[in-house]
View 1 (cartoon, rainbow, N blue to C red):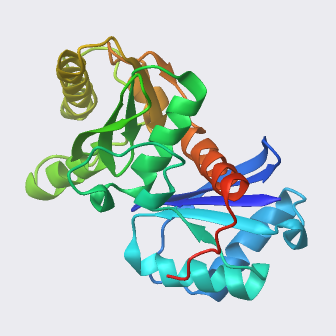
View 2 (view 1 turned 135 degrees about the horizontal axis):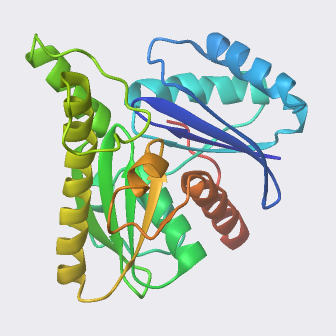
Length: 265
């Protein structure tokens, strides 16, 4: 079985694949100060609750945007899974040309999303990932990674508002308010945060479409994708498993094309 792990600044998303079938997936918090032993304790409990036998996991691929966690996860794989993980970088884009000025600057999560989106949907695409940052990745009809945009995510923007405006209360963002015009402070804040971010998304997507000179399909993924898709005018569909699928696809393409020893970071 294949273990796929995407390490983000806020959350770690993991999945177990048997062939192309996703058996189970989990979302946990990214803890930069954990150890490989603590990480093993956590994931072992998750695996056991889902009847996953750790001994059957014989390969692992990881994308990571948190440098502090590379050593932790590398040690976890060697110590508890008995093998070295494969780490995603700009060289493992599964045949997708990266047209960035410096391909090494593209985050591993963005590469994974782009590869998965083109593999699944083909054609011209824009992937919007609602994570710690909200990222926009443009893919051409030929399957080229064109570049994109990065903006502060919804939660980052919210935290900044709570910290800098001392009289404003902290509000939870679980669903969009029914009205844009709030009738109290909390609903006004929810409206501004959520509908304001929707306006940002729609504005960037429309400008990207103009520059791409195509009519790309807009795919949303990430923790807040379903909430935002309800109110964004430009999103065509939500695919919350896109990142995990991309990791699986990259691993299969790499291992099928050439035997590459996993990197040790």
